[in-house]
Image (tube, rainbow, N blue to C red; front, side, top):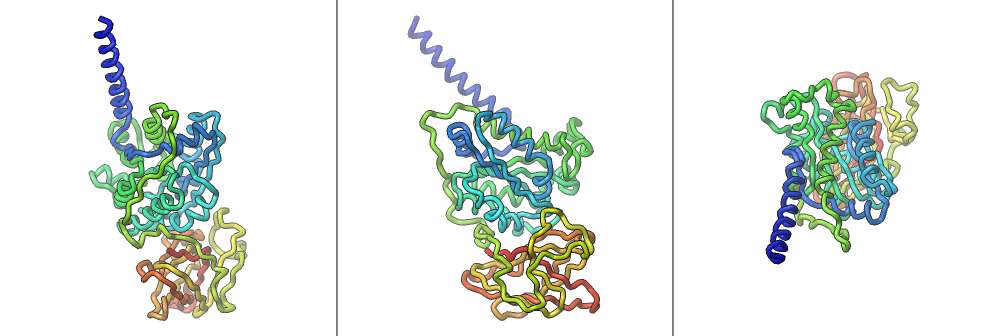
Length: 400
């Protein structure tokens, strides 16, 4: 009898484990893609009682939205842990800018335990990247993190704008999300398809676009993002840690999806450039320059010129070169020659430049042969008028 009861207890015990596992799995909706991992951050938070968590993205990250909500949830989950939260959101920036500024704005801050990223919206509506453009930016971020800080866990959330929502409601996947997901699957990075979650809830009648809050969500919309992230992390961290639990790095795929992805991306200071007297590396007199300026860039030095023909030369090593610029109402066109080749025109002006000094990354070349190169850059004369836009303001050169 005792033997039968013992067997029964064992069966019930293992059935209970299976049931718990099924329950945990059942909690994950189709819009939560858990791809393993996420234990390094948990070990750090639970065992070491310290944690450094970073958020990188555009205005959705920079604003008082999902980021502080997730930070609060983590602090409540680990009340005895001393956290440092890094806000590396910069409004309007896409995944290209994210890849180039990742080291300066996040990884250089020390050990990062958990990184949250969002760039689907800005890759769609601001940068209007091609599929390849979306891939080389997101892969630039993910592979760079996994190479420089292999113990850092990463979570990506796909937010939504009206155009993307309409595509999803029509049964299509927005290009930026589809491309980013290809990268995340390749590197086994977990993601939240918030955009589709919103569409699902609108269809079910439990949410409206107005209640969600639009492209920049209201508290109710950001709470949906927090809910998905909490469900993902709660699922990953459901079972107790083994006593001998230790951190480990995921295997990095030998080959990137695209060999020119910006995973070696970095900033190169304009102060290193050789320039004519017409180029000034200084803090512009913004009070006397038309167009609004975000406080993020106040007091920063920029390399500036507004005289057609003004030249600057930058030497670099890699296979890609571009510039992170502020493109305002007076933004003009640059002409760029790489290694003495023909000059090519690069327009700095953006659709949002009319009343704003808009931050954006423009690439001069992305598929150069690896090695040392020289870029000669000059301000172009407007094609149709000698009084047209002709100003360039460079925050950083971008090199991969």
